[in-house]
Image 1 (cartoon, helix red, strand yellow):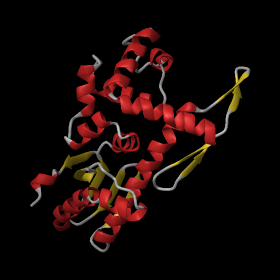
Image 2 (cartoon, rainbow, N blue to C red):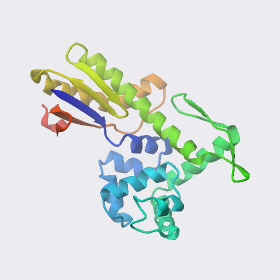
Image 3 (cartoon, rainbow, N blue to C red):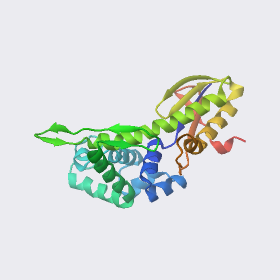
Image 4 (cartoon, rainbow, N blue to C red):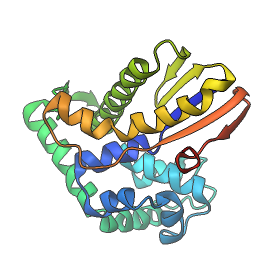
Length: 238
């Protein structure tokens, strides 16, 4: 049987932690379906559109990128329309807006960003359209992607230590860890994956000496193949 564990909302959690935006942090602590809430708040077409909108904005999306993107321009091709939604988003998540500005200013001043884990990202301006400019999307993207990778790496090592000899580790991509196990081992493995991700904040603090003040959760699925997987909830395992 395949058992797959995915970090729930990995990049949103990473952005919330790095920005310490109070609204986003509280939504994560409360287990809110953030994309569904924002779909209604910002009058977007559906939850998937709300999810895409959020990630594009986290990584430096502008009114022009929304207006020209086929994922969004069927809603509106007017940059002004999207700027209103961007402004509303930053009004709700003002900590994200402040953090974005701080990231860009720090990268331009120091030509680097230093993460709580000790990762260092370096940046240089480049010449485009007859002027020097800074890679804003890269500046905003790298911290979130990098922290997400570090969080899953902690979970991956912890999973391997707890499950060694009980299953075969066969894949790990982005926020996903996949193992192959005999049927009778599956319930215990599912429970372990849930516990592993719950323990990530404590292990993060132990490794890096910095508090991680947000919960981590996992989506755990089981199936005979990747096409036919069913979720196993934490509260169904006793």
